[in-house]
Amino acid sequence: MIKKNNRSIILALAIFLFFSCEKNEINEGLGSYALAINNVKQSALQLNIFIDDEFKEVFTVKPGRATHVSDCDDLNKPDQIANNYIISSIASGKHKIEIKDQDGTVLKSLRFTIGNKTCVIQKVDFN
Image 1 (tube, helix red, strand yellow):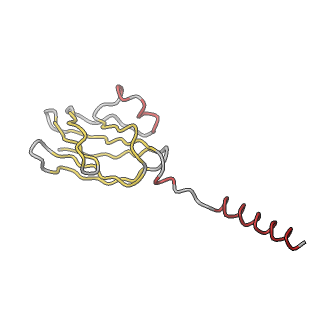
Image 2: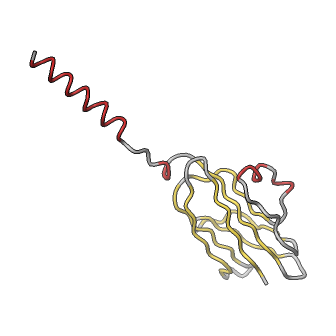
Image 3: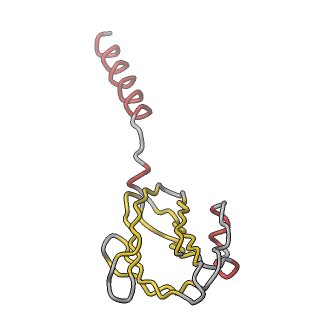
């Protein structure tokens, strides 16, 4: 009888621990990121994009406002979105994006945290 009670208690504790453990979705999986860049200048901008201090690419921003993106589903149509820098798969967690000019001067620096299967949309203006 005592062995049966011990097994029941151990089983109940195991079930309790299994369901009470929180998943940390911030550090698992992939998310999406978009940076809307408004360029009020008359000419295109050549911007160097760095993610977490690693160079990614040169991104050309045409004169004008960025296409308004309000929904994560909009990120799946990059050909219909103007002046938005999109990363369709980025590891969950904390990140830093830096925008530098051709000389390496930091023009903008932003931080963001992304979760599993979520998206973050940020905006910057260049006057």
